[in-house]
Length: 151
Image (cartoon, rainbow, N blue to C red; front, side, top):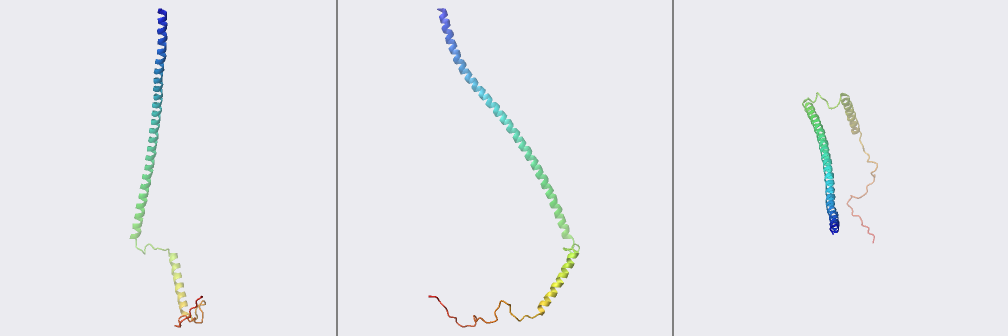
């Protein structure tokens, strides 16, 4: 009988061990899954940190370029302002608007224009333009016109 009791206890212990390992192994599987998720999340977080650091360094470089461009533009604006101020302080005779050749050409053109005007005013025009009729139309002579109506 001792053998049968030992055998029954052995079978009950085997069945209990089987179920115990099943329960423990499912929790260990869950722990493994959670550990894998944690590892993946940490890797994603590290990659995100690297991306953010790269973005910030790129943004800093762009801001430095913008700053240098703005400083260059400000220097050019200051130089242009100084040049304009110098130009306004110089006498008008000291800095002509047109070159000497252009002024000579303008003077010649002006004298030619004045001569043509004198010639045009010297001729008397007594004829009406060609698009005018020589005959009177009678429109403004004060007579009543007959109205024609189509009835």
